[in-house]
Structure formats: structure tokens, C-alpha cells
Image 1 (cartoon, helix red, strand yellow):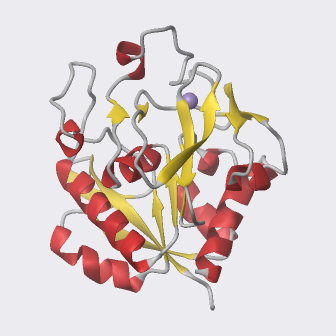
Image 2 (cartoon, rainbow, N blue to C red):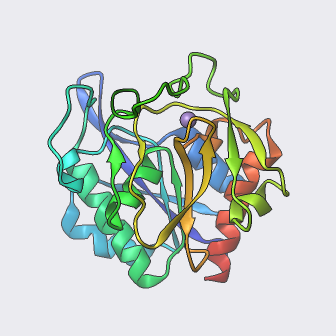
Length: 239
Ligand SMILES: [Mn+2]
């Protein structure tokens, strides 16, 4: 395969006095460095999701706002932050289409949550509020290119290969939501010492890897974090 086309849903944001479709520079740059061609997907036109899905070879689900809880059958708690239901609906549709077409996915932060929701799982709307024991600081105050808490990586996972057998890895953390009930086709492959889910993967294939942390903010200094993107491009090429 020539350089694979990687779709990245672009969040709508108010910048100054106009709305813009935006994607984090780190994700665009990491995909290019790993040998892919990023294509930004607008997220106001759900009806075009199938057209975009046919255009791409792989789907990167980036960080972003909270997912509206109606997509997993709940009402919003007071701790919910901003949500955008057209972004949610577009990403959920793109994920279902990618699964149906066997197009590999990489989820980052919100991306891990929305993949789990799209495939039938759910999330904590707010981990500090809803987990009944003291959790770590998952919204770190340290600079985002620094690791702040450790995660434990599961035996036999893609992450274990990516991190060359290391079991205990320092990652950054910038989230207040997390995967709760796993979708049937996913398995938990990393968690923090407080029990918070930090990565999920497909059970029986190499279709999905999604991490709760932000490798796009660490890959310049950390080769193992860049290996997450290299692994993604490899998976896309072999699909
Ligand atoms: Mn975390």
C-alpha cells in the first residue's frame, strides 16, 4: 500500500468570532511522521460519514470534549463538561462503519471513550464523583508532555509489544471521564493503580487500540509513545 489515508474527525470550535473545524497539531504531525496522510473529517454532516469512511484506510479518534450521556443511555450529571452531540453522532457512525469495513482505529483520550460507547460500552461521566474510592489526579497540572501517573499493561496485548514488554509505564493524564462497562468486543489492556481504565483493544483482532492518555503530546521525547502511531500505520497497511 502507498501511504495510507488516516481520517481524523475535526471538532467544531469557536475561535475568535468564527466557528472552525480543528484537530490537534500533535496528532496530524505524528501521523505524518509515522508515514500516513491525515485527512480531516468535518463533523457537522452525519449524512456524509459513509462517504468519508470509504475515502480512508484508517481512523484516528482524537481527544476532545465530553460525550453526551444520552449516547450511553444516561442523563447528565452536574460534573459533565461541554459536549457536542453532532461530533458524538458523527464519530459513533464513523466507528461503526470502520468496524464493518475492517479499517483499523487508534483512539486517544476521548477517542477511547467514544469507541467503547459506539460498540456498546459506557463511561464514567466523572471519575472523581462516581468512583467510590480516592482516585489519582487524572487531570494533571504538570506540563502535558510529562508523564504523571503509571499504568499497568496487560500480558499479550498490542501495548505490551509497543512498549517492548514493559509492564509499568509512566503516562500523561488529561481526563475526568473514563471507560466503565467494556464493550463486548473490547478488552482492557492498561489500567492505573487506582483501577481507572487507561487502554482498550479489540479482543480477537488488531482492529482497535485506544489509550486514555495523550501520546501525541509525548511522542517527540518518548520513542515508545511514537511506537503507538507506528503500530497504527502498520495495522492499517496490513488490513
Ligand atoms: Mn489517567
